[in-house]
Length: 178
Image 1 (tube, rainbow, N blue to C red):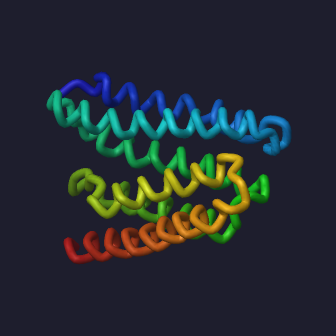
Image 2: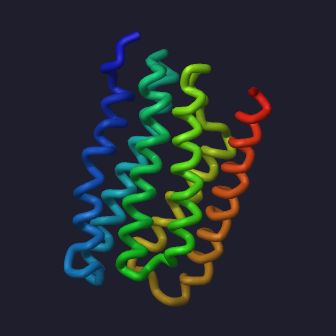
Image 3: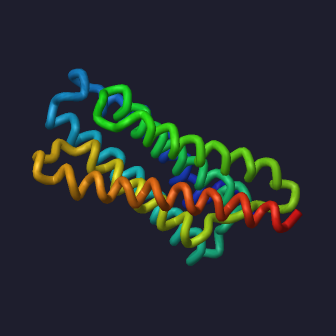
């Protein structure tokens, strides 16, 4: 199977778009609502490529080990860019960033540690976690009115809970295989 295909190209495009997303997030010290919306659009488009690369890969039978491994790393790079940027700007609590990034880095290291046994694809819970993280972080990127802060925070709380539970589940599954 070829490594160079449309799904893998979309995954690589996600990595290449992240510096622009970060630039937009920090533009004018991160307080410019126009640039906040531009940053949100950038992160949203990057997130859409995640949705499409998987669908295209499965529908065209272009699933590769390279893509299966790189896709979740691209997800982590996207969420990490947004979380760290938002925390630096003081718009996301650092503890949320630390919890999510610790889980994401831990699972990535675990994926590499068991790579010789084959690539472990993302579970349905992991995909749900990714969706909640993406939307949750997106709400923090957008210049929302104060009355939407409670729903935004509740959404992010669900994302944190899914992050912890799916991370635990992932480690348990790997340990049971050993």
